[in-house]
Amino acid sequence: MKDRIIDLLNNICGEGFAALGYPAECGRVNVSNRPDLCEYQCNGAMALAKKEHKKPIDIANEVVEKLSGNAAFSKIESCMPGFINISVSPEFLASYMSEMLKSEDSGLIKTDEPKRIMVDYGGANVAKPLHVGHLRSAVIGESLKRIGAALGNEMIGDVHLGDWGLQMGLIIEELKDRHQTEFTLADLEEIYPAASGKSKATLPDSNELTEDAKAFKARALKATADLQSGDPECTKVWKRIMELSKEDLKKNYDALDVHFELWKGESDVQKYIADMLQSFIDKGIAYNSQGALVVDVNEEGDSKELPPCIVRKSDGSSLYATTDLATLVERELLYKPDAYVYVADKRQSLHYTSFFRVARKAGIVRPEESLSFLGFGTMNGKDGKPFKTRAGGVMRLELLIKEICDSVYDKIRASRDESEISDAEAAEIAKTVGLAALKYGDLQNQASKDYVFDIDRFTSFEGNTGPYILYTIVRIGSILNKCGESVVDAAVNADDARLKAQLEAVTDIPAVKSLSLVLTRYNEVIPSAWEQLAPHKICQFIYELSDAFNTFYHDVKILTEEDELKKAGYICMLSLTKRVLNDCIHMLGFTAPDKM
Image 1 (cartoon, rainbow, N blue to C red):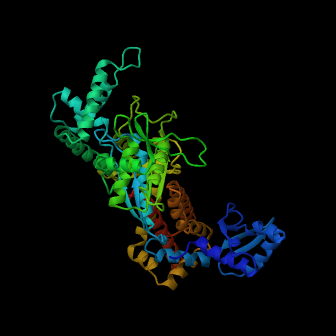
Image 2: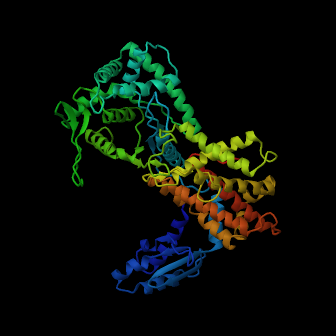
């Protein structure tokens, strides 16, 4: 397809304005916010009136008279004080939807200029299990990557592991204290918290570290430095930690249906740091401040002063900003992306602002490359505080996934007996539906906002939930199966004239027209969701689409329709709706089962 439906309407209305000597851009059309009055609305006469020294309604009347009779409109009329209300014709809708059906991607218009885009999401630390705090980055980042790919971009997702910091030194020294040379992942899950606690032990009724804690932390810092300097013994332990951690992380990310093209970590970029920092000094952008190396990041127009970005601490060690900048250096050398998208907690916004500005100032990225940060809010419990286990701890991600899948399984078992669905089949369906409930529950919220994790609401088969969307897809599939594969193929794959005739036979039916108007917005929603890094727009769209379909399903008798042309038109509507819903949920990162 070449055009969005809104662009076609813009062109028609723009030609109407231009024919009267007015600027064509005044013909811009919007989806009506008063669907009880019209389907689309043009407000160009309102903006034009002052310049033309005319009443808005007079200009609107002129345009309406000029465009009356256009085949795209079933009704076009002016309305005080100068609005132009538009309803499109069934023929116009049928023509557009026939193009969507014939298109390989349901009419989704790909970008004219595909880009290579690096998405940095995940951010897990090795030697630690994934917990609920890792959920949003993984779910949002995966969705953005899939949306960008659907529009024709080359997307590269990097998990960007934390694998080179103090936690490594703490584990190495704790293993020494235990005289332990072999260890498992289960051991690591106990060792790291123990080592971290040992390094933070304080005196009674005081914030001051104990002498033992100070000594242990000093040893851990030295072990970290030794590791970063290539010490063979430390490197051997680190490699074993990495092997165990990556295996577990991949298993957990696979369970979330989240997949990274790159499994890079902070350790991969240490080799670039010394030369990078020297280049900052040589360019005159970095200077010494109380022994640390810093770069000023304030820019004209800032509402408040930003602190300098520390790129090397006074003890010579690196910080997150240092490794993030070095990561950019490596990515530019190896991949040369056109754009970057970082997905992380919104509380890290200062960090991203600072290191983005240093990257620009140092010329690490080209001026035309975009650096975008999508900061997300927290997932909270019903008490409004960050989500915890019943015991008050941070819940492991695999346990959260299990809890939501168990909830879906219980609902399936309560509604279907074993003669309909076996236990094994119910468990498999629950996995698919549970993942949809979890991801949709997260993604339906604007990313920057906090939200409440409500397992009962998220797993409901009614309302704005993942299971409701999946149930709609399964319902469509069931109807199409009853129609028969040969009948469906004949309707959907009819020649151009027949296909359009089939759709024209039904698009004047109110429920069908309402469904059509939502479907034809597909081409607007997906690019908008990508441009604004806003997967919640897709959630909103498919909820509206599911509602429109279910109204159509209740209002229209599909299987018993005797008019073959109309029945074929209904089948086309079913097929296109199912395709669009399936394409959208793929972009959100989940799939639909065959039955529920």
